[in-house]
Amino acid sequence: MIISTIAFYLFAAMTIASAFMVISAKNPVHSVLYLILAFFNSAALFVLLGAEFLAMILVVVYVGAVAVLFLFVVMMLDINFAELRQGFLQYLPIGGLVGIILLIELILVVSGWVLSPEALDVSSQVAPLTSGLTNTEQLGQIIYTDYAYLFQIAGMILLVAMIGAIVLTNRKRAGVRKQNIATQVYRRPEESMAVRKVEPGQGV
Image 1 (cartoon, rainbow, N blue to C red):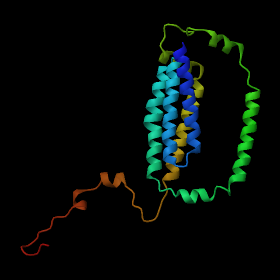
Image 2 (image 1 turned 180 degrees about the vertical axis):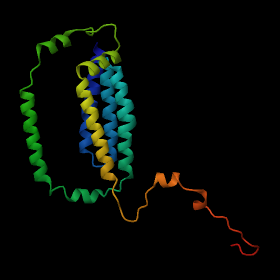
Image 3 (image 1 turned 90 degrees about the vertical axis):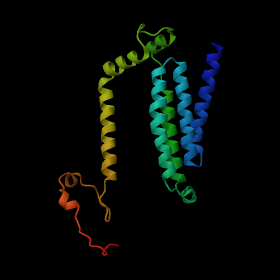
């Protein structure tokens, strides 16, 4: 019990520290690396809570796909850090105002947050409510029964975001040739190649 408590506080402290470094690091590549560290520590916290499936999903999806994609995108971008730092003082009043508003909202939310008696009863139980089922089965039953509509709405939001990203990036620009699949499929051999008879001494 003592070892699990020490591990919990260790992983929790590492998660908070790495999350703070994500927003405070000057180099975006370092921020993404700290984000990956935060994901690993969060996965360790899920393992301590007995949610191995969520820990695996966090490592495979977020660390293996999303964070690595962020890292590749940041490394491929030609970012001028000196130019970014020049406009810091210019946007500081607006950023400070937005930060103060968010802080007030967080204080109002936390001050009005009350735990329900049902949640306290569930947290005091040692064994899960549905014994005999694995973690994945319990999670699937909750998502696809109690939160089925919310799960479908989340999928629709992600679909709209994906279509919006495709529409925004699919712009027509002058001088850029695009691939036409229909033209390539219906192209005949005589349109794409020509047979030339080269006489001796007429070659290159």
